[in-house]
Length: 258
Image 1: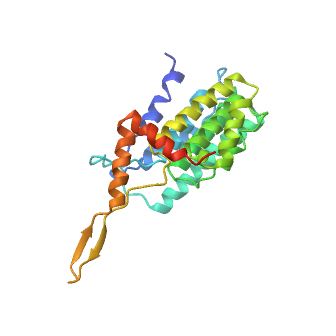
Image 2 (image 1 turned 135 degrees about the horizontal axis):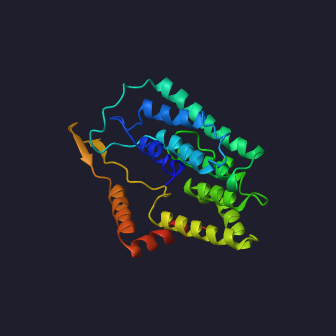
Image 3 (image 1 turned 60 degrees about the horizontal axis):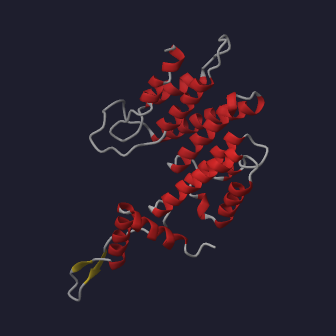
């Protein structure tokens, strides 16, 4: 196996390292950032599009904190929040630089643009950067490469944009009438995944609220169990443990959607 094929494994693994706060340590993030920023393939007869794409993805993943189940790894000093914010901005700008580069010198199958959209989708979903689906929507129009359009539609779907009736109507229209059978089939797959996510409650506005404290006539605090909360918990359990419960929840979620 060639060194270029194995090279992304190290930064991808380092992007998954987390400290006790659930954050990727500064040293690991900086290592990935420098690999991407100072990557120079000018003297190589072979392209490094996939290698660079993997670095972009690894850099984005390193910015997303993960809730620790255990004690985590004690690695590196505690980082200042302003310093972390500055690094995040620099990392996003670096990913954007490759996206803009793709507008002048096309990468293989627009892989830089597709990867940049995937990274931004993940960062928006994790609330690392502002939620702005319009950045993805701009790539869904006719004339854009099919793979880029599909990446944009997939990102909008994962961000919950199909909860908007106008965007849902637009999605279904393209899914039904696009000239490319490949695009139509892939959009059907994305649409079915969205329906599954709706059935499981991923985009549901209802949530189980905690019990509400009240006081009795003597002034003692009582915990009154919220009936609505209990019903919501039962509904969530039903929709996530059986096909019948999921289908019932799906019909309930979309019953008023013409």
